[in-house]
Length: 411
Image (tube, rainbow, N blue to C red):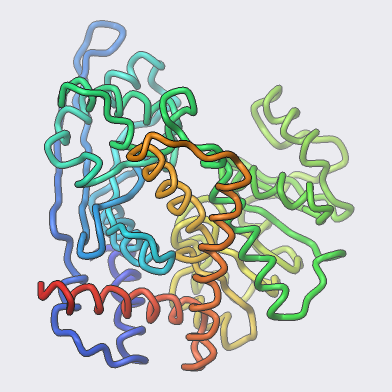
């Protein structure tokens, strides 16, 4: 059993210790309902064949169709995908949207293949899993190193297979083929709304606070942009290779231009180059891990100086470290709440596709805030009621909703 699976099950068990769920079937959540593991050959640009490995794990669909991202990464493995699918089940229940959890992945380094090769890899993967996905079965979405273009390929290949245009087969698509306004920034925007709610509950005025963002991909970069646009001071950011720090605050718009031109964050005028590890240990008010899992562990938890940690990534703080932070009074906003804006707007996109009626940005943002306000209130009040951290509170909320669905359906 890998660390990812152990983390997922430990969080499940902790919630069950605090709240006695009267549902024997809840034990089934420890297992995935379906695991798809494939190997498929792809012809590369030089004419050779290369075999790729892919996965799709469908964890649980008691509350609705499976929903979850598709990630491309050379270190993707089955246990990681299983854990992420489990977390998606919890996340969808916390957000109170009618989905179950799934996740997919392909072992590939996107930096070492051409765009044409990536398209062939994506289409071949889609052909192999097509019978298991679809608008009423399982709806993939972008994840690590995938984007709207990848989703367009998946949708197009699936549409050819079923013989009709099927935009609702995936979410996170380009606007030109049925994507939703606000989907590209939804994870970060949702995280920002949650921060606003948290500051209100804690009676904290955000002006003058300092923020550090680990990860400068879609979620991290957009979060930095949103913070800066609201006149909040981002003093450090990092990507997969390095980070930068300026206690006076970074000009995020200029930094994005610098990254686009140079391909790196380092070398930005006035900022000191630091490592990802050093960024995590900065004395900031709010730390936002927006990259990989398990970056805050027992090995570095005592070096963390932030007062609030916002998990924009999936599983960046391991459970044991989270408990230690809670005892120290550090507030950890769990991933299943903090980054749920992405799947919420994915749900909105799916609804728009099924109805063939599309919303303007104001409606998307308003509905996102309403959905997150309810989720935050439920988690906050539950955590206070049982005197637990927000992660355990979120799991109690999610498992309560899943239990009700299991009891009503009789599965």
